[in-house]
Length: 80
Picture 1 (cartoon, rainbow, N blue to C red):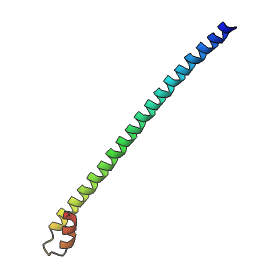
Picture 2 (cartoon, rainbow, N blue to C red; picture 1 turned 90 degrees about the horizontal axis):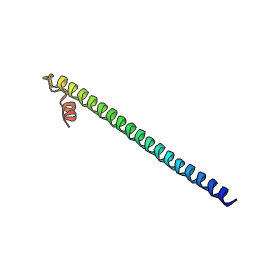
Picture 3 (tube, rainbow, N blue to C red; picture 1 turned 30 degrees about the vertical axis):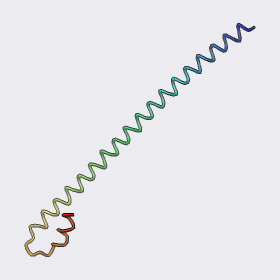
Picture 4 (cartoon, rainbow, N blue to C red; picture 1 turned 180 degrees about the horizontal axis):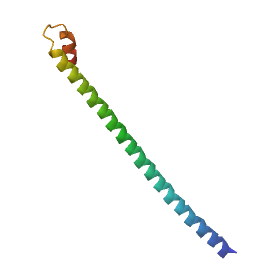
């Protein structure tokens, strides 16, 4: 009887170890996916920022062509 109990305990221990390994692998995969999502968000945010800067630079170049000085306040704001 004790041999049977030992055999079941050995099987339980092996399955527990396998479960721990699978859980760790799942955690590693999820962490990797989270990091990739964060990286993609950062890339998107950087692209948005670059686009905004390009838009402001284009607007500033356009306003600087005005020789009347009517847009001087907006030029100063964009230069900041």
